[in-house]
Length: 184
Image 1 (tube, rainbow, N blue to C red):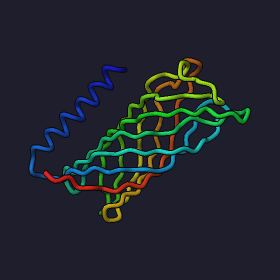
Image 2: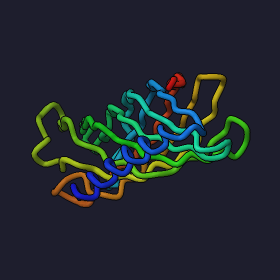
Image 3: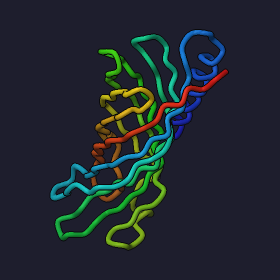
């Protein structure tokens, strides 16, 4: 898993470096903040709200296609049957293809490795029982209002979150960002 993650990040930087040397397209950075609604697919798990924030770098390949990659702090976890809470914080690295289906409306999909920063169950440290990496597939839509971007994504967890069971994360996120063009 670590080799796949390293290869994905390396490919992202190589792609961005090669795009930066061409005259076509535009680069931008987008600080972003918003809300997560997270849960697991385990029985009895309930949704838990949290914060998401970070930045994404984007390259507009053409009027129809763009790519983006970012670093996002995400508060995830779930509520349990006994009114307890599992609180997990992740550093997620979304790598997405963006397809503009209509003017400023884009659909997006990609891959997202995540790194566990902390994990607590009802206030007790739970990090040793939580896997250090998480892998998910984000799908979503975004709409641009000038330089402001409203983005909605659903991250489908494909890796197990802990050694204690087969629970996988499910996270819905809504963010607002501000796109800043980068000059060459």
